Image (tube, rainbow over all chains, first blue to last red; front, top):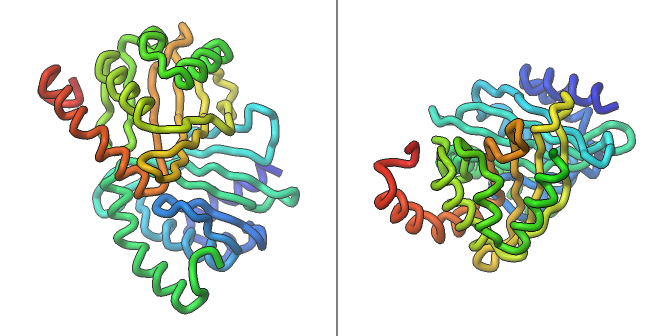
Length: 140
Length: 140
Protein backbone atom coordinates (compact mmCIF):
# COMPACT_ATOMS: atom_id res chain seq x y z
CA UNK A 1 0.00 0.00 0.00
CA UNK A 2 2.73 2.45 1.03
CA UNK A 3 4.89 1.40 -1.90
CA UNK A 4 2.07 1.82 -4.40
CA UNK A 5 1.31 5.27 -2.99
CA UNK A 6 4.95 6.37 -3.09
CA UNK A 7 5.49 5.12 -6.62
CA UNK A 8 2.44 7.04 -7.83
CA UNK A 9 3.32 10.12 -5.75
CA UNK A 10 6.84 10.36 -7.18
CA UNK A 11 5.55 9.80 -10.71
CA UNK A 12 2.84 12.43 -10.53
CA UNK A 13 5.06 15.07 -8.88
CA UNK A 14 7.76 14.51 -11.53
CA UNK A 15 5.16 14.80 -14.31
CA UNK A 16 3.08 17.53 -12.63
CA UNK A 17 0.11 15.23 -13.25
CA UNK A 18 -2.70 16.99 -11.39
CA UNK A 19 -5.37 14.62 -12.64
CA UNK A 20 -3.57 11.69 -11.03
CA UNK A 21 -3.03 13.81 -7.91
CA UNK A 22 -6.79 14.19 -7.39
CA UNK A 23 -7.19 10.41 -7.46
CA UNK A 24 -4.84 9.71 -4.57
CA UNK A 25 -6.30 12.32 -2.23
CA UNK A 26 -8.86 11.10 0.32
CA UNK A 27 -12.10 13.06 0.11
CA UNK A 28 -11.53 14.44 3.61
CA UNK A 29 -7.80 15.05 3.15
CA UNK A 30 -6.24 17.73 5.34
CA UNK A 31 -3.06 19.69 4.83
CA UNK A 32 -0.80 21.69 7.09
CA UNK A 33 0.71 24.08 4.54
CA UNK A 34 4.06 25.80 5.17
CA UNK A 35 2.68 29.36 5.54
CA UNK A 36 -0.48 28.72 7.61
CA UNK A 37 -1.22 27.12 10.95
CA UNK A 38 -4.85 26.19 10.28
CA UNK A 39 -5.26 23.02 8.27
CA UNK A 40 -6.72 23.17 4.79
CA UNK A 41 -9.48 20.62 4.61
CA UNK A 42 -11.13 18.71 1.76
CA UNK A 43 -10.01 17.41 -1.61
CA UNK A 44 -10.69 20.52 -3.76
CA UNK A 45 -8.65 23.06 -1.79
CA UNK A 46 -5.80 20.65 -1.00
CA UNK A 47 -5.66 19.64 -4.66
CA UNK A 48 -5.54 23.29 -5.66
CA UNK A 49 -2.72 24.20 -3.27
CA UNK A 50 -0.66 21.08 -3.99
CA UNK A 51 -1.03 21.80 -7.69
CA UNK A 52 0.28 25.32 -7.15
CA UNK A 53 3.24 24.06 -5.13
CA UNK A 54 4.13 21.36 -7.65
CA UNK A 55 4.00 23.91 -10.46
CA UNK A 56 5.94 26.61 -8.60
CA UNK A 57 8.85 24.58 -7.22
CA UNK A 58 11.39 23.83 -9.94
CA UNK A 59 13.76 20.86 -10.08
CA UNK A 60 11.59 19.01 -7.57
CA UNK A 61 13.55 15.93 -6.44
CA UNK A 62 12.94 13.52 -3.57
CA UNK A 63 15.78 12.34 -1.36
CA UNK A 64 15.60 10.61 2.02
CA UNK A 65 12.57 8.57 3.06
CA UNK A 66 11.56 7.50 6.58
CA UNK A 67 8.85 5.15 7.85
CA UNK A 68 7.09 5.34 11.20
CA UNK A 69 9.27 3.95 13.98
CA UNK A 70 6.17 2.36 15.51
CA UNK A 71 5.69 0.32 12.32
CA UNK A 72 2.51 2.03 11.07
CA UNK A 73 2.83 1.78 7.27
CA UNK A 74 0.47 4.73 6.87
CA UNK A 75 3.03 7.21 8.27
CA UNK A 76 5.87 8.32 6.00
CA UNK A 77 8.31 11.24 5.93
CA UNK A 78 9.86 12.38 2.63
CA UNK A 79 12.62 14.91 2.04
CA UNK A 80 12.60 17.01 -1.11
CA UNK A 81 14.81 19.65 -2.67
CA UNK A 82 14.10 22.21 -5.37
CA UNK A 83 14.33 25.85 -6.41
CA UNK A 84 11.92 28.74 -6.35
CA UNK A 85 12.80 32.04 -8.02
CA UNK A 86 16.44 30.99 -8.16
CA UNK A 87 16.58 30.13 -4.44
CA UNK A 88 17.50 26.71 -3.02
CA UNK A 89 14.91 25.00 -0.88
CA UNK A 90 14.72 21.86 1.25
CA UNK A 91 11.45 20.52 2.53
CA UNK A 92 9.76 17.60 4.16
CA UNK A 93 6.38 15.96 3.55
CA UNK A 94 4.88 14.29 6.63
CA UNK A 95 2.43 11.90 4.98
CA UNK A 96 -0.46 10.02 6.58
CA UNK A 97 -2.37 7.55 4.40
CA UNK A 98 -5.88 6.26 5.00
CA UNK A 99 -6.76 2.57 4.99
CA UNK A 100 -7.24 2.66 1.21
CA UNK A 101 -3.74 4.02 0.67
CA UNK A 102 -4.86 7.54 -0.23
CA UNK A 103 -3.45 10.74 1.24
CA UNK A 104 -5.28 11.50 4.49
CA UNK A 105 -3.05 14.25 5.89
CA UNK A 106 0.02 16.07 4.64
CA UNK A 107 2.12 18.49 6.68
CA UNK A 108 4.74 20.35 4.67
CA UNK A 109 7.68 22.27 6.11
CA UNK A 110 10.24 24.22 4.11
CA UNK A 111 13.58 25.93 4.74
CA UNK A 112 15.21 28.36 4.36
CA UNK A 113 13.03 31.36 5.09
CA UNK A 114 13.78 33.32 1.91
CA UNK A 115 12.66 30.40 -0.28
CA UNK A 116 9.50 29.98 1.81
CA UNK A 117 8.80 33.71 1.44
CA UNK A 118 9.28 33.50 -2.32
CA UNK A 119 6.98 30.48 -2.54
CA UNK A 120 4.30 32.30 -0.55
CA UNK A 121 4.68 35.37 -2.75
CA UNK A 122 3.79 33.27 -5.79
CA UNK A 123 1.02 31.11 -4.34
CA UNK A 124 -0.73 33.39 -1.84
CA UNK A 125 -2.51 35.63 -4.39
CA UNK A 126 -3.79 32.56 -6.25
CA UNK A 127 -4.92 30.92 -2.99
CA UNK A 128 -6.77 34.07 -1.94
CA UNK A 129 -8.51 34.23 -5.32
CA UNK A 130 -9.42 30.54 -5.08
CA UNK A 131 -10.83 30.90 -1.58
CA UNK A 132 -12.82 33.99 -2.56
CA UNK A 133 -14.52 31.95 -5.23
CA UNK A 134 -14.85 28.68 -3.37
CA UNK A 135 -15.45 29.33 0.31
CA UNK A 136 -15.50 31.88 3.07
CA UNK A 137 -12.18 30.78 4.57
CA UNK A 138 -9.51 28.13 4.34
CA UNK A 139 -11.15 25.85 6.91
CA UNK A 140 -13.99 25.20 4.46
CA UNK B 1 22.69 3.38 19.36
CA UNK B 2 19.67 5.21 17.94
CA UNK B 3 17.64 4.46 21.05
CA UNK B 4 20.34 5.72 23.38
CA UNK B 5 20.63 8.92 21.34
CA UNK B 6 16.88 9.51 21.29
CA UNK B 7 16.47 8.90 24.99
CA UNK B 8 19.22 11.40 25.77
CA UNK B 9 17.95 13.89 23.15
CA UNK B 10 14.42 13.91 24.56
CA UNK B 11 15.74 14.20 28.11
CA UNK B 12 18.07 17.10 27.41
CA UNK B 13 15.53 19.05 25.34
CA UNK B 14 12.90 18.65 28.07
CA UNK B 15 15.41 19.81 30.70
CA UNK B 16 17.11 22.42 28.50
CA UNK B 17 20.35 20.70 29.52
CA UNK B 18 22.93 22.44 27.33
CA UNK B 19 25.88 20.73 28.97
CA UNK B 20 24.50 17.34 27.97
CA UNK B 21 23.73 18.72 24.51
CA UNK B 22 27.40 19.51 23.86
CA UNK B 23 28.31 15.92 24.66
CA UNK B 24 26.11 14.35 21.99
CA UNK B 25 27.25 16.65 19.16
CA UNK B 26 29.97 15.33 16.86
CA UNK B 27 32.92 17.70 16.67
CA UNK B 28 32.24 18.32 12.97
CA UNK B 29 28.43 18.48 13.37
CA UNK B 30 26.56 20.47 10.71
CA UNK B 31 23.12 22.06 10.90
CA UNK B 32 20.64 23.27 8.31
CA UNK B 33 18.79 25.87 10.39
CA UNK B 34 15.25 26.98 9.48
CA UNK B 35 16.16 30.55 8.42
CA UNK B 36 19.41 29.95 6.48
CA UNK B 37 20.38 27.86 3.48
CA UNK B 38 24.10 27.57 4.29
CA UNK B 39 24.91 24.93 6.86
CA UNK B 40 26.27 25.94 10.22
CA UNK B 41 29.37 23.88 10.85
CA UNK B 42 31.21 22.78 13.99
CA UNK B 43 30.23 21.99 17.56
CA UNK B 44 30.48 25.51 19.07
CA UNK B 45 28.12 27.32 16.69
CA UNK B 46 25.64 24.44 16.41
CA UNK B 47 25.58 24.14 20.18
CA UNK B 48 24.96 27.88 20.49
CA UNK B 49 22.09 27.93 17.99
CA UNK B 50 20.45 24.75 19.32
CA UNK B 51 20.67 26.19 22.82
CA UNK B 52 18.90 29.35 21.64
CA UNK B 53 16.17 27.34 19.92
CA UNK B 54 15.62 25.07 22.92
CA UNK B 55 15.36 28.10 25.19
CA UNK B 56 13.12 30.11 22.87
CA UNK B 57 10.52 27.49 21.94
CA UNK B 58 8.06 26.94 24.79
CA UNK B 59 6.10 23.74 25.51
CA UNK B 60 8.55 21.75 23.39
CA UNK B 61 7.04 18.29 22.87
CA UNK B 62 8.01 15.48 20.51
CA UNK B 63 5.37 13.53 18.58
CA UNK B 64 5.83 11.25 15.59
CA UNK B 65 9.11 9.46 14.91
CA UNK B 66 10.31 7.89 11.66
CA UNK B 67 13.33 5.74 10.81
CA UNK B 68 15.10 5.53 7.46
CA UNK B 69 13.18 3.34 5.02
CA UNK B 70 16.48 1.94 3.76
CA UNK B 71 17.20 0.61 7.27
CA UNK B 72 20.09 2.93 8.14
CA UNK B 73 19.74 3.36 11.92
CA UNK B 74 21.68 6.63 11.75
CA UNK B 75 18.83 8.43 9.92
CA UNK B 76 15.82 9.58 11.99
CA UNK B 77 13.02 12.10 11.55
CA UNK B 78 11.29 13.63 14.60
CA UNK B 79 8.20 15.82 14.73
CA UNK B 80 7.90 18.47 17.42
CA UNK B 81 5.33 21.03 18.49
CA UNK B 82 5.66 24.13 20.63
CA UNK B 83 4.95 27.81 20.98
CA UNK B 84 6.93 30.96 20.35
CA UNK B 85 5.60 34.35 21.37
CA UNK B 86 2.13 32.86 21.76
CA UNK B 87 2.15 31.31 18.26
CA UNK B 88 1.69 27.61 17.53
CA UNK B 89 4.54 25.89 15.78
CA UNK B 90 5.17 22.47 14.24
CA UNK B 91 8.61 21.35 13.17
CA UNK B 92 10.70 18.43 12.11
CA UNK B 93 14.26 17.40 12.97
CA UNK B 94 16.01 15.39 10.25
CA UNK B 95 18.74 13.71 12.28
CA UNK B 96 21.87 11.96 11.03
CA UNK B 97 24.06 10.23 13.61
CA UNK B 98 27.72 9.32 13.21
CA UNK B 99 29.10 5.86 13.92
CA UNK B 100 29.51 6.72 17.61
CA UNK B 101 25.85 7.69 17.93
CA UNK B 102 26.48 11.43 18.14
CA UNK B 103 24.67 14.08 16.09
CA UNK B 104 26.44 14.44 12.74
CA UNK B 105 23.86 16.56 10.88
CA UNK B 106 20.56 18.16 11.80
CA UNK B 107 18.18 19.84 9.36
CA UNK B 108 15.30 21.69 11.03
CA UNK B 109 12.15 22.88 9.28
CA UNK B 110 9.32 24.82 10.91
CA UNK B 111 5.80 25.91 9.99
CA UNK B 112 3.85 28.13 9.94
CA UNK B 113 5.62 31.20 8.62
CA UNK B 114 4.58 33.62 11.39
CA UNK B 115 6.06 31.32 14.08
CA UNK B 116 9.26 30.95 12.07
CA UNK B 117 9.46 34.74 11.72
CA UNK B 118 8.96 35.18 15.46
CA UNK B 119 11.65 32.58 16.22
CA UNK B 120 14.07 34.32 13.90
CA UNK B 121 13.26 37.68 15.48
CA UNK B 122 14.37 36.33 18.84
CA UNK B 123 17.43 34.33 17.82
CA UNK B 124 18.91 36.32 14.89
CA UNK B 125 20.33 39.22 16.95
CA UNK B 126 21.97 36.76 19.35
CA UNK B 127 23.37 34.70 16.46
CA UNK B 128 24.79 37.82 14.81
CA UNK B 129 26.43 38.85 18.08
CA UNK B 130 27.84 35.33 18.53
CA UNK B 131 29.25 35.20 15.00
CA UNK B 132 30.79 38.66 15.37
CA UNK B 133 32.70 37.42 18.37
CA UNK B 134 33.50 33.92 17.14
CA UNK B 135 34.09 33.99 13.41
CA UNK B 136 33.75 35.95 10.22
CA UNK B 137 30.64 34.10 8.99
CA UNK B 138 28.38 31.21 9.79
CA UNK B 139 30.38 28.73 7.68
CA UNK B 140 33.25 28.93 10.16
